[in-house]
Image (cartoon, rainbow, N blue to C red; front, side, top):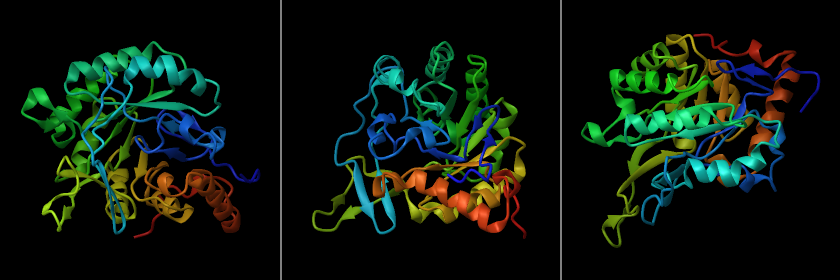
Length: 306
């Protein structure tokens, strides 16, 4: 990274040395990428989603490559919060980079218990709340598709922790700004968007779905225009920092999100294509600022002219 530019940003009470984070579910627990990436150069490491108990996820096949990205139906496989704290967090505590724990549950009390557990643990800088999970006790709806339900969930999490709370929003809604406003009012310190878009693929030889789960989440370059539009809309609608996610493959992609109003970005599917892409994006942003005669990355955030 070039020393003559300032890449630091603040995302709702958490200061990052640069605006490039990893996206939950695409970077494991961080250690898996240590051989390819200097983890201490990242803005933040967001670990894969954690539940109260370990989860095996969905049956395979769980990933399908698409023309411009991928479909996944992993089913939030993870080692559980206690397994993470016991076996993975000790290594992450050695990093200078902030660690953000992504959490999910099937009911509101599970989110509350996870937030309380994390609040008592050193080495986790913030919580990202995945509100795109099925709410089993509410008729199978996702927490993130109804503003009132999303707000109640975020308020419940907020009561359990003093750590910064980031809420990851689903794009599978009619108006994402309504959800963003609701969770911001309920106590979210920042919002990240978007999560994957629901999609599917068919094997024409067998005439069966290519995912065992039938549908999955579409990610990668295919969703970038949708993500960029939603980030721009939400950044104009709320007063909390917005983290842009969706199809970011290069520094140019990341810069588009920053100019559209994102304070920081998360890099997801690109990690599977190029394990060192996050650091390359950081260097690319710094080079762009230097070429443009801009001293601080904060000076370009939200500068889109329409």
